[in-house]
Length: 125
Image (cartoon, rainbow, N blue to C red; front, top):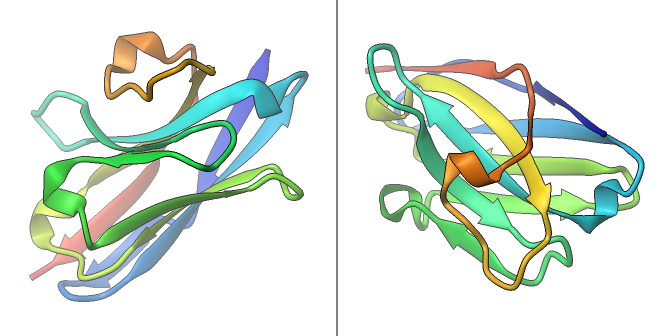
């Protein structure tokens, strides 16, 4: 069982930055690939970024490439999402998620077994 808890969301103006954190706890939690997803009101959940359990591989939604950076600190058991140059269309509830490690990273939400409660990010224009 893996427990995930996000923090760091808030209100920011367009062009600003936020860093989301996801505290990871549970047995064997270092054997999981991690991802960030988001869901805007009235829209389906959307993949944002993923990182392998080793931290070596990353994968991003095309529209956030160059603006968002996913990273992890194994010593602190924490996953991060650094978000720069934020746009109003980035407004959503952001969730971290975990799945057993695999050869390839996944953008499919249904492949992730564990989810956090979400943190709201609002970008004003």
